[in-house]
Length: 242
Image 1 (tube, rainbow, N blue to C red):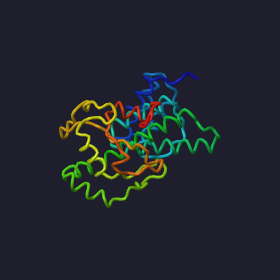
Image 2: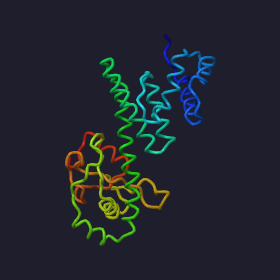
Image 3: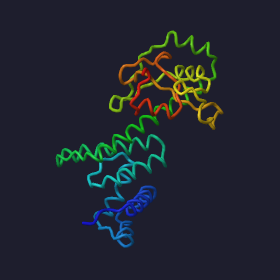
Image 4: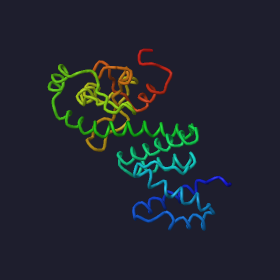
């Protein structure tokens, strides 16, 4: 059997979106993939149908290859809101669980793709909600924020055990950014750009001891970093104290 190509995957995804949005059965659209791109009937149906399963957070039992899984999740993450993206990622998890129980095949490559997009969704979900709260916190004075922080709990609340998603204190973020005044705490350079929405310097607030490692959600455990230094903190070989 010939491998499914990226061209076929892209076309199948667009047909899947059309089928989902218009309520059309994949059976009515699969002939396009069969006639134009020489896909088999079974593959054409499965690759179109899976798009709807992802968007609806349904477990799908037909298999699509790793390249298609990544492409579908990437496109959904780019085109839809965070809740839809989370639904698609959850559908992949359901498929992995089903496939493991049915065939004892863990599908390691697809599982890595799932983990990648689960983390992306976690970050997007966290910052989407957090951004709104930070905007509100920024409207207050530094004195007001510091007063609230004196009595605020430093133990972050775990709100999603599966993905280890924590509710962060917006006052901590807002005050750390205020203290940084647009300068990265690590490289001591100015923020790389200005935010379009409020003309503030773009820095990212990083927990020195991660919340998942029981680090406190407080000013003393945070630093304001430029994106490059933030990535280095997570993926580099140096530590904040080296």
